[in-house]
Image (tube, rainbow, N blue to C red):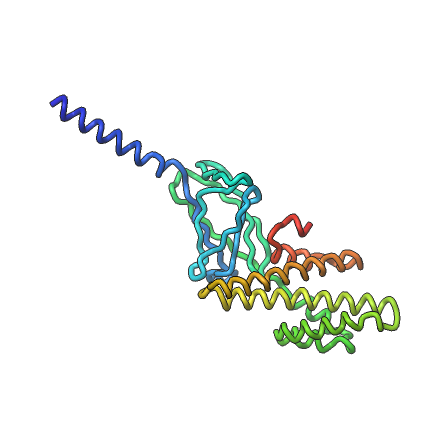
Length: 249
């Protein structure tokens, strides 16, 4: 009897020891959606203290988080009753800070709603009073981002031919704006097109469009600040495209 009880006790202790590590740390299940509550399948997120960007599932818009990755390569698991600060972004959407408190549940579920960047006001602004640069604006308004880019690049090549300083600054600013917003549109199109078939070649093309969007967004933000214009939208676009929030302050 004593021997049987000892065996049962040992078996129970072994099961507890094995189960312990599995139940020790929680998992965060994150879902990213649009304002219409449809899955935002091109979203990515990161922690300020983490070295890794994570992407959501390309069908469900969901992802899980159970560990952080430190600069030295070590992992730091989530713990109960801690508060996590996440940054969530997607091409064409505002970068959003999301705060989650990990309660005592093994699997904590949280949903983030990303607002879409409002580009209509900036397009309408550029449409007003434009004559010599109207083609690039019209192409952008028609969502022909490649043609809009070509017109903007042509404008930049000829910018020094403008008759005065005001016209020079105006042409420069309009061209940088259209280049940045067109690059954002091209990246968003690539992300949506390749999301379900992310081969090595597609991943390379998507990364190339993102790098271009990132570069042109920062150039737009720089010229906007230099000319003393409203930087609200350029800053939002920069944060939407940048791999690091430190590049868009």
